[in-house]
Length: 107
Image (tube, rainbow, N blue to C red; front, side, top):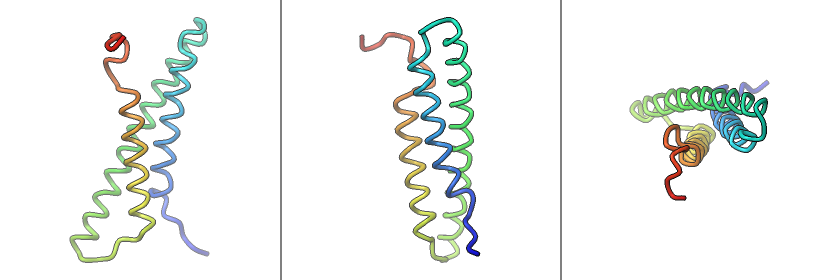
């Protein structure tokens, strides 16, 4: 039975899940008082998941760096996972900045 490495699968899934949580938090935030409480939990949970995805991405990058330094081949699966995770995290972090979202800048 083939063994699937966990980190290349989990990192992009966490990035996508964190982005989904932040998007849901943004959409339901001001409907009611109860919705705002749920929105706060989703926002916090989304950022916790994003941080975990960033940590896993860092571990992947270190592993790929060690493999390249040792002149070992890097699998396409690992390279695609790093690329997908980086892209997803970049989009999520750019569209949901951690600070400055409530300032009303840009009208």
